[in-house]
Image 1: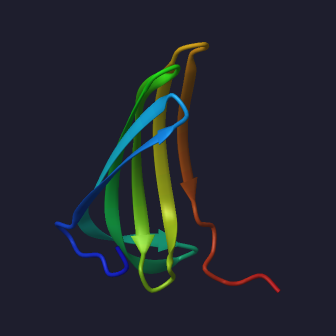
Image 2: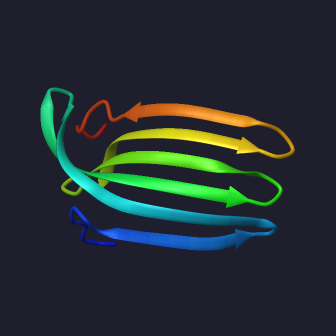
Amino acid sequence: PAALAVGDRWEARYMLRKLAVHTTSAVVASEDVEVDGQKVATLVIDQTTTSSGPFSGDERVRLWWAPALRLAVRRTVERRLEGGFAYRLQLDERLASTTPIG
């Protein structure tokens, strides 16, 4: 969605060869996040993805989206997949600065 608000929800389903994917997303809150000493207004988006097929498992993403910047200032990911191999990921990435380089 182009214009997001707390309470908005959407979902997607698709196939990638033999892999079935279902993703649900929801804007769950608004929150100020500090980036390089500045408060940035964000919308908190929770996303859950379930995959089934040759690799199956779940992924949970929380995204702090800053509409004024048109980018995420923070993202956490927890992914667990099983199948041909086990795959685990825990990630917490944060924007270091809102100042453009160059």
